[in-house]
Image 1: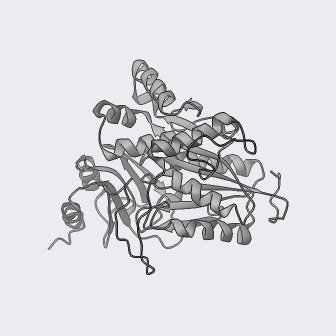
Image 2: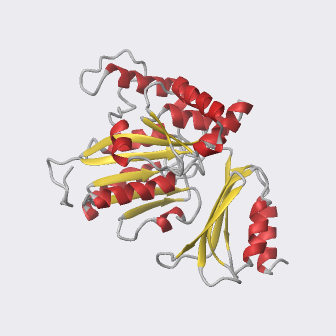
Image 3: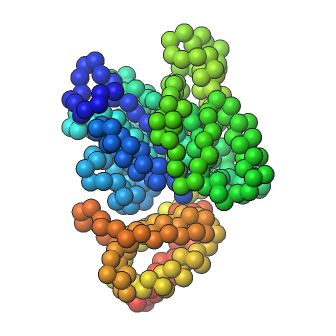
Length: 361
């Protein structure tokens, strides 16, 4: 990798990193730190950011000097997967980045994203360096205790397909739970280094070195083919196991107009509600509303103007914990909130928000 930005040439491959992890695990926090790390090295990073909602809220925390492609309204691995190659190609041709990082929505199954990147590498010089999965220690502990649900299986897939695992929020579990979680990650993915973190604080050079050697998922699904060209036999077997354990799943079926006929198996349970505000709301009333969200809503985020404060705020909510930060949005960003969960009552959420705005009928 060059130390200074340069135009894409015939003899230089652009490194690509995939950032995976379930909703609220800390992916965006890590993304910001990675971008700062690369910029300090004099490199020009670029981002492809995917959101299930209609607005790219996480992108508001990315420095406006960083080129960013947005893929909104669906998951990379199904409804917008066909655009991934086009986005990669356009970023390289128009921005000449030194490195690209893809942050996938927390509902994405990373195996299909791997496929999308490796397909693009057939006609563009890309080097897939690492698939980093961020794991929320407390959330995984709770799901593991129940041992059921599609969310639990999706998190397993994200862990099994990783080339490096960041076990984040370790301060929210005790020593015994942390040890058992580390054993669990080693059981599900024996080939990925596990790095424990709080707020994704990690030595970036170590993190980027730890996950190198990602293999194309299309090389083998049996583990029986020789692996003489790329990496070790162990890394090849890791890819095969990833596919055989369920990370490789069927696509949605679409007609030529792009209409979906079948639900995507790995995240058909995920629901998204996007609410656009017409008026500022009281900050204390909104905080009470967020604190009382139903358990079926496990992730929410948005950008709001409060009636009793001077600044706009970016808020995040994950698994009954919320955080608010002053922000100066880039461009014309509406006051909006996105709620993500499993089979929650969207109408009830809407009515409560309308009541906060004083516009309920």
